[in-house]
Amino acid sequence: MIRSLILAFVLAASPALADDDYMPPVTHPATLEECSACHMAYPAGFLPARS
Image (cartoon, rainbow, N blue to C red; front, side, top):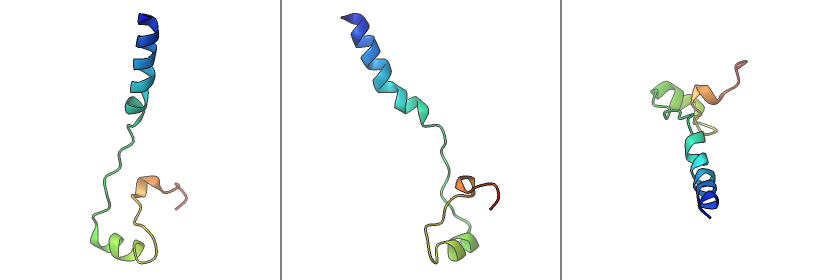
């Protein structure tokens, strides 16, 4: 019984530990003006390296 509770707790808490890739919102005025004219202004870290 206790083993099942521990397993349930670990499985329930694991998504919170996996979310470590926080990217701050885009705040640079020129980037917001150019990039958000036709789509959402993505943080540069989400773009592929070739961009």
